Image (cartoon, rainbow, N blue to C red; front, side, top):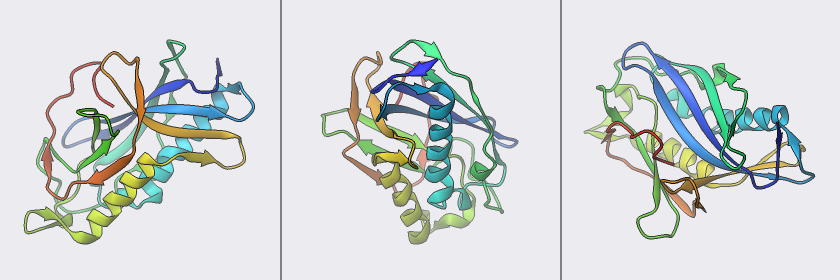
Length: 202
């Protein structure tokens, strides 16, 4: 399938965690293409590079517990209502933190704001190790890494010289309106992640 300029992709990055179970971070991404259309393979490579920069390039993997093993990336073209070929696991996204893992359901939280009232995106990152905590809060060094993650999530990403750019957006429940993130903030307090309802979330 060819990908057209301004197509919206739903991207689910999956980790298998031997302690807490499967972990998924889902994103909606607007694809901009200088010379459209682009091949599905070319866009898949760009998405994989974006994820690698998001987690490994920001050093977020150093806080993620080593039980988080990246397994695959599912992609769906929302604009064309069609699935894309999944990507294999990306080794650079494996967690690197040793020690004890956070209790099940507890996660580091990043909030993306759109500038529209009540329209925000929340990302619960794969489970951290307890060494990142200081007096019950995420320590300043790791909070800075989380903020780097947040800033990258909100920014437009230009993949090499391919002419493909990716921009994370926040979707409404029906996946009909997609809003850019104007600011993203790392939350210093560990959050409890309630189970996401199918079809909902950024």
